[in-house]
Length: 339
Ligand SMILES: [Zn+2]
Ligand SMILES: [Zn+2]
Image (cartoon, rainbow, N blue to C red; front, side, top):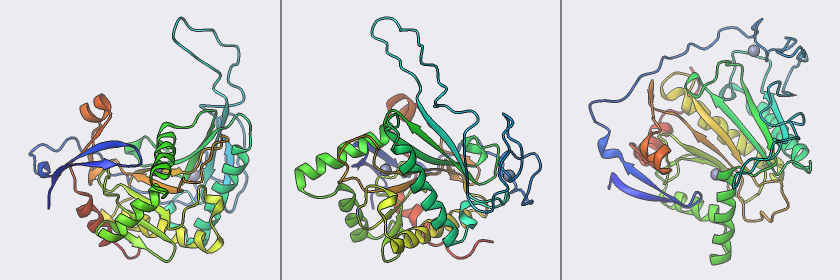
């Protein structure tokens, strides 16, 4: 099997260099400390725990399930200045309209998405759908970015399980690229691009981490990060809200199956950036867009960061030191219960 090659990323329309033959280089980069999980269910000075006061004086509900509130430090928001100075020449600017929110998954400070039960995950999926629909209906919101940063290595200081939502006036670049690629593929072949990806993953089989009757979790052939995973329904739906009740349950099970494997892999809370990839909420035609969730874990080994450097930051394409087939096998084999 070739361990040194380039792989085409059909969703991002770019090449990924797989250079797994270099894994045994003597220098492996900096290590990062393991953070011990918080032992307590309630933390007095956590701004996300039930009943606590937040930075600008608002007090959280004494919530039992999921709790959503407007971000106290929004990067986009209704209060963004509208009277902007016009920049010189070619430069352009505009108000940072939109809405930023925070979603607490559970009142339990020491829990995590991986530890939620499947019905609780279904509740969360429904909450995401509701937010997408509500924010997406606003005329100033053309895209709803739902994401969770997990772990100190991706800059999270508060371990209370939560995600963020940015409703923005622009469509985030990755989603825009995926939507264009999906449309072009459909025009050229009459098929849904993501279905062709799923078919090829199914035919190969080596990178499937978990599958049930209507959902799948897999390391894509073209993974840019070690342990990068997609979770997707098998049927094409442009948005989470279009999944049936049974599809939602299957999807929640696939999500949990993956998250448990992540945490089991190195017996630590597995850091990642999780992003929902659904259709933008502008007036475009997204019938060929296939909803999925992407996980981008920043670590290559326990305590070993994947650095973004020359190829990634400088050039804009990824160089991966790991083989997707091997990483998928590791994840498959780390199943079982948390502990
Ligand atoms: Zn908390
Ligand atoms: Zn995607």
